[in-house]
Image (cartoon, rainbow, N blue to C red; front, top):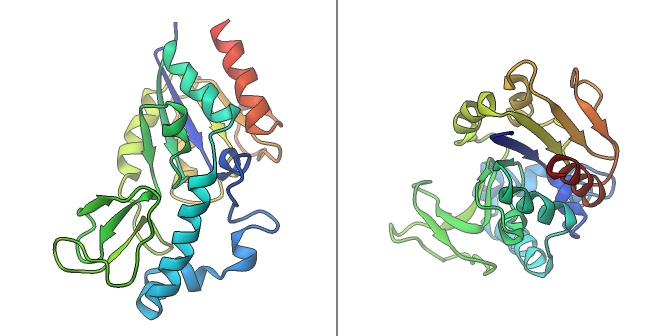
Length: 226
């Protein structure tokens, strides 16, 4: 019996819940410049614009619901130990019922102090306004890893990868580093499955299922538990 399943998830799984992705055609970067909304420099130049951008993302998330892909992964916990390592900043995995989720790029439903990234504040789906301060007296910002910032949890994720008995990659093009390098840390011989309509072909030895997450993940889970 399998002991530990690790899932690497990306924007594709949440796109089916109506959350806009950043890299696809008509994605968020088509309408917003990275340099304007997703760097520390952007926040320093125009914090209100950056806050408004993420407030809108948070409002959109509040209206979204987990899809069949999220729910199927949560159901896996009835049979196996499952760890989800996600590039997504939404909370759809948790709302579907997954209990072990590592957010590499932060969490939209939390704020943090500008001065101290360890000072985190659960805010749910509320907006962050200019002038909202942490208990250290400094401005709050989204708890999101911006371009040019370190990924604090990457070492924890890297340490988990060799413990997997099976790996699922879903909804990610594996183009964003350092997250993309995690699949290289899988123990040789451990099965890897990639579920994505435009799945990359450069993952040697991986099983490729060119399906959207809401279809491919339930099929994969059914195969495992039957």
